[in-house]
Image 1 (cartoon, rainbow, N blue to C red):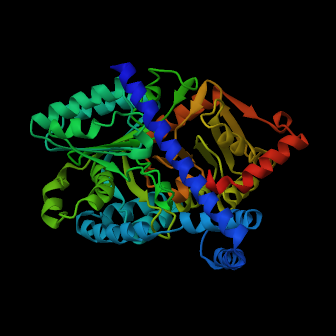
Image 2: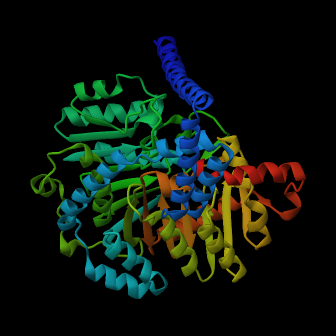
Image 3: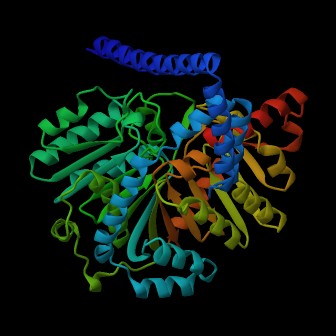
Length: 515
């Protein structure tokens, strides 16, 4: 059975690759023939290239993207122009944004904003009051009190927490992950999902097609549906050159009854729990929310789920919304203020980037960051450098063992200017750092799915949770202290300053927005 599946997987990947190559070949042949035999087509493409270059300059967007596309148009006038037009056809994206706006309006009466909690949180954490206000009033992401937050410093602990919550599900289970792969982790979760579905629990599973199409058998969705599980594959991959394939569902959310929810960097694959070794020890983080904050993550799951469900209505939302007793507020130092939020590539607001920048600017003492990729635009790079030069203790941990070589080289291309500014860069020596966690002044933290790179900040659907206060802060600080101790500090003396390396890094930086 295993050999049969491997053969199928190999054939599927080869066929898709061949189909894409055929498209490129036909595409190139038609263009070359047109240019060789027609002055009309040559003139048309020249004028089109000029028009595209002017459009890129005038279009609202990231300057780094503009520079990258303009360079491609200048270096490859014909192909660069056509690729720009092809990858910026946004008909499908615009339709999705209109659908999302309808869903946001549907969710608004059910988001349960807690004005008392917001007022109290602003008083307790005045440096971050503007961030709270921005997310709640501009983004529509309420801040919640009455929430218990538990931090998982490693994927194995996150996995055990998920299984325990799944076993206790009574009404519904919502499951959304970028990668789902066959193995120990998925099989145990799948068995629990099927068991709960057969017991009458509403089980909904959604995973990204590009994230999972080489890791799951083709009949996975049908198998789950036959067991009573609702399953949807987000943005099915088609080997047709189109911009919509860039917009992947990179979110990771598990919601149980709307009262318990999980998120973080952990996907559903055995390397995330170190059951298999891919790049040494796999370091990841996760978080569990119990209380009102869990409902905020549940709404984020429903955002994309309901884009594929035309029957979504108030009646369904009323059925799903949990009841929280006002008198049973969670008290004590373990409780925290929670603000879940999401980011979409279909709108014009980059919430992930904005949150990172506001956290950095609000810091008074320290900013500690876990990220697998460090490919920064000018805004984020400036914020980090300015913080370090203002006396803030800025530390960033990236992987020592990489999963994507060119991406890792690009990450390292930023080291020199960051180190020169006083930022402490570390590489996680035991293996691969996949966590996406930020800790500011030991009092506010972010745990989620957002990487410090262009793809995550501007092209993917992402989610994260801001945590203000609570004993979880000491848990995150303890984990980071331990991680710094086993990581290699990158000093100016360790950086390679050869001209060849500098040239390669410079070229990679030019194309960084497309990585």
